[in-house]
Structure formats: structure tokens, C-alpha cells
Length: 198
Image 1 (cartoon, rainbow, N blue to C red):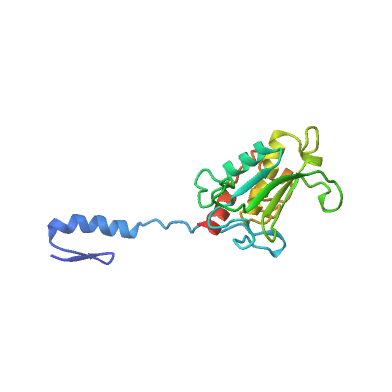
Image 2: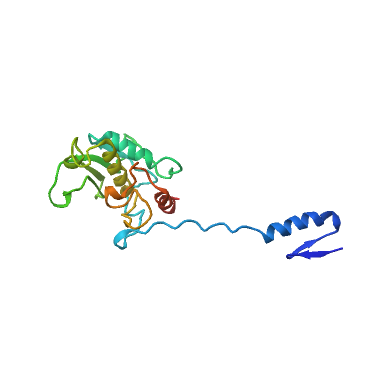
């Protein structure tokens, strides 16, 4: 005896039960959701490996900043909970620094109201932590404020651009007040990370 159940071909009665289960499984298969899409950047920019400090899956750094706790926090949050494609080793005799953490104390020009900035350079890129706003008693001068600023800037060093204020929660939003208060990458940041780095 042969019968057709939803396109599955069944054999004699001993296999009928197996075919019935198979046919039911085929008919009631649940569609898996599509992979989340990366969050769009502001100003028509895109997240980019080419606009990052990453060299062969790492950002080797040298440290000239007094805000070492913030630097350590930033490296930890961008390399935990599955964010493991890019590592952050300290510069040593076996590698050349890809990025330097250092300090600046300015409130003029492009530094007005800016806690820190990442900039690619012709050699070593840098993150400048701005003591004018990160120092004790200053606008972003709390442990939490310094950590959030450092984590945001390290996100730029990883190749991430600013995200729109109207979009999903992100550490990469332009203003500190728009970013998560815990200073950690959000779900959308993780999606962007895996889209860019695998």
C-alpha cells in the first residue's frame, strides 16, 4: 500500500508512521527569522573595516592616558559576550602599535563639548581623552562618564560610525545622553559588530 501525504512518499505500513511524522514536520515547519540587519549610520556613512584601527584582527595599543580604567573597560566590553573577532593586545616588542590612548585638555574649536575623539593617522591612530571634560568634577568627569566615552571611541576604532538618534539603542549614538548608561554595546551594536567582523 502506498499513499501520498504532503508530497512525502510512504512505503508499507511499518514505515507509515515514520512518513506521517515526516509529512507533519514538513507541513508545520516554522520559518526562521531573517538575520538582523545592521543599523544605518548618520550622514550617509557606513561601518567600515577600511576606516578602523584594526590590523589583522587586532588593535595593538600603547597607553599614555591617565584614564586607564576607562581604556580597560572599553576593551573589555568590546571583547566579551561573543564579541571575539578583534582582540586588544598591549603593544610590545613583537608588534607595532595600531592605536595610542593619550590625553588632551582643550575646549576650543572642534574640541568644544567633546569628551574624547578617535582619529586615524598615517601611522598610529589615536584616541585622545579630553581632560577638560573628563577630569574630576567636569561635565563627563565620573567613572561612568569616562568609561562610556572610552567605549564609544573604541567603537569608532573598530570601524563603527555614529548611529541615528531615532534608531535602536546603540553605544555609537553621537551624544552621551543617547547612549546606554551602562556603557556596553547593545543588541544592535552586536549585530553591527558581527556584520562587519563576522
